[in-house]
Length: 132
Image (cartoon, rainbow, N blue to C red; front, side, top):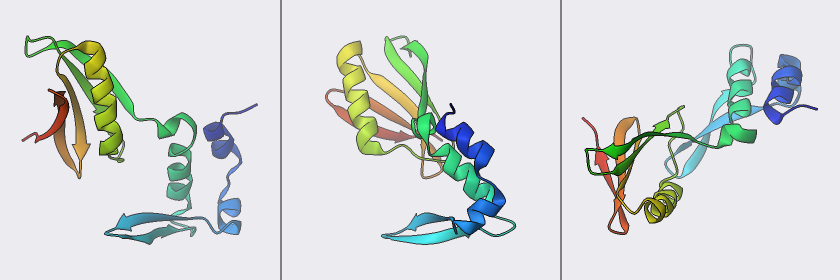
């Protein structure tokens, strides 16, 4: 009995990655472009990317930092950014639900396109504010 990530960590070897011809891709504009192939220098990164994207690794890590942010009882959350940006449509829905429960402004610090940002939800809408 193993979790997905521990199974991959244990049994996904360099030889198997090469035999399966695994690769990694990135989105560029509207296209997907191969960014890594299963060669001697990239197989480890391909394995780590796969491990990061299975099981609980697919769920963003978000923690409550302050329940009285700016002394106005706003809920302040921080996203542990691991190189993957949040999907904004899901973030907005999540903040909307938290706002319904908290009944005050909900603020989430995250990274969007390599820039620290605040996602602020109040008055039935989300506003994105870049941090300097």
